[in-house]
Length: 136
Image 1: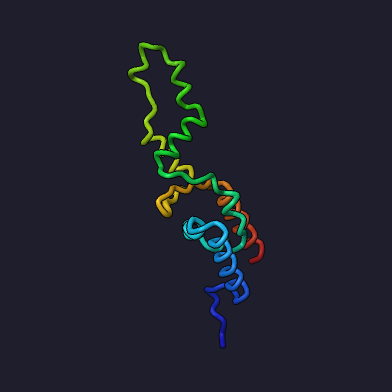
Image 2 (image 1 turned 45 degrees about the horizontal axis):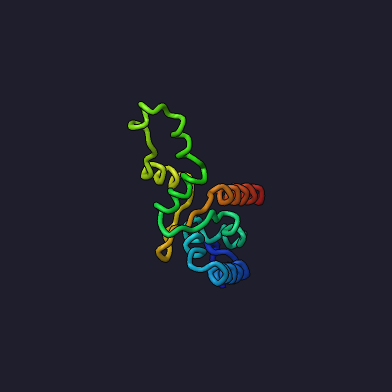
């Protein structure tokens, strides 16, 4: 019987199922959503990618934005604005949220917002592409 070339070998598929199941058992449904968002193959090849990419989870996007503003001391920068200009200057949380959604991987799972740094994902994807190019 001829093996399909559009699927990985049986051993890799078995490892994939184990890695996926182990990830969901260890980290919960957010792991499954992460694997779905970035591609199961990246998580199969590097099960720790989830942990390296995870920034954290919050009750809502608003909570994440508030924490981001506090941690980066973005609001503190407004103290340098002259008093007469303060009514015209402010932080727009909706725009901050939109910017963060562009920079980070934001997933809503089980009524929580899970935030991931895309840099480890991109690095893994580039390395995989380079390896595949060299093996051809």
